[in-house]
Picture (spheres, one colour):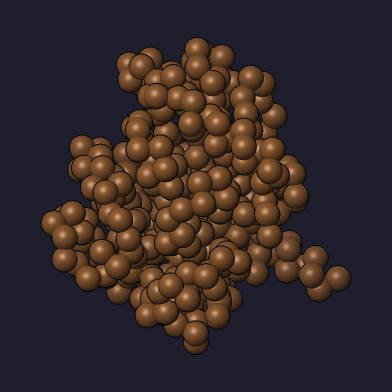
Amino acid sequence: MSVLSEKEKEEIRQALDNCKHPLFFFHDDPDGLASFLLFYRYKKEGKGYAVKAAPRIKLEFAQKVESYGADQVFVLDIAMVDQEFIDAVKVPVTWIDHHNVLEREKVRYYNPRKTIGQNIPTPYMCYEVVRQDLWLATVGCIGDWHMPDFAEEFRKQYPELLPEKITTVEEALFASPIAKIVKIFSFNLKGATSEVEKSIKTLTRIEDIRELVKEESARAKFVLKKYEKINSKYEELLARAKKAVTDDLIVIFTYEEDKLSLTKDLANELLYSHPEKIIILGRERMGEIRMSLRAAKYELPEALKKSLAGLQGYGGGHEHACGAAVKKEDFEIFVNNLRNELTKQDYGKSH
């Protein structure tokens, strides 16, 4: 399957080829990171900036473009880019994404929801452009719960990482050797900005996925050390989160942690173990509960929007995976609102 047209692939490729100082903004998750790495390893120039928290490029990001002296901006896997940012920067902007379609001016915008009506992760499109580093594209797509059609090609090259018995993306994410690579990507984006920047720089130098598996090179050992440090905390939280699972349809688990956000990773694994449940995984920080929401059998975005009405909060995302934040004092109200909205979906299915 081809997501981008030949014309679109050539447009993006020329944007990469014809710049000298590109700045790459990308979402701080495995598919965003893989998208950046695919482009950076093709171009071998530029700087990557992981956009943490809400995936949005606001006017203030224009200063980063100016201070770096960028002659081209690439926005990868970011759901929202403000028109004020596009207007403020004086260089071309290429935006590749797969979230809800937005209308913007003066930007090259590529979104499969707009062109082919499908939700295909950003690294899939980046791979179509550069046609190298198949392993990065596969890790990125699987990290976003999408088994790409080129997974079979990956399986032939790396049969030990994606065995024949692994047939679904859920199995790949949680019951195959490639799962660890996805977590290595995710966990190296956690923590202080200075640490994240070192990890990103190191990952740009990883030549092949087996370098991470064999743990032989100094650069592989660097990112694995970071992974192991975060993973110990993750396993502790996961054990606690599993105890929050009851007969209730909604699983609610919150924890206090000022610096480390693992809500997305924990919510994904809980959903894999309990696909019939609605997962609310929250971290308390600065008077807010910052959440990852997951539900395999319910559609979340509209229910989330209605649940936040009248509250101090924000949120959005995909059909079955969203992020949100509300003030701590509004959290219980929000949960009740969400329960009511999702109950209406159950009612609709039965009538």
